[in-house]
Image (tube, rainbow, N blue to C red):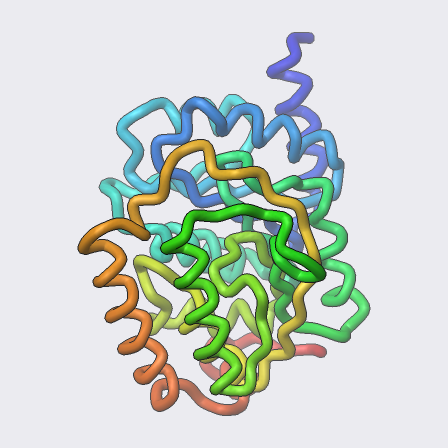
Length: 263
């Protein structure tokens, strides 16, 4: 048996437990997706692995399938948030009770997934955010991104939410959060602090856990030029809209989605 087929077999064994899903949005990640999936397979955590290919022009989808993941493809690039929500909706329709999201660029260590899922499995949290900065700032980011993070933290505190890494893409959530995130109001581009604040307003219990993250292998286009201006404008507008667009009771979604919510 080849190493590729061994990895695929390992994934299929993990995917037997269909209530736990690992969602990985990916766009043109052919250089890294195979290694990410190999590292995930080594953890043997029992998740169904879902790679959402957001209209890649390279072999991301092919390599993800070869790595044993279930692949959902967008016909064109729709944005990071849209790719995440596609994964959320698939997990929701499949009866997920626990969902973890991580990036496809190798920044996140899948061995740290149990640290994120433990508070949810113990019933003390609904949403757990993996933080690069909790307990100290060993992770280095550029000046503009650092200033932006401090600004977002200040905005979060003004709404009563204490979070050290509001843009982290390494998170775990239960079905209560999932019923909120599959709504049409979920942003298609940058689901960051606005989503966390909307979740908090709905009564979602949010915690952070310290995780290690490798530097991104490619520069972010978000924090440069007009993209940064758009991001700030969009985030302020989205936060304002979120204060009026969600119910305060997350359990109210069970009637909409026909699903019993347990905490």
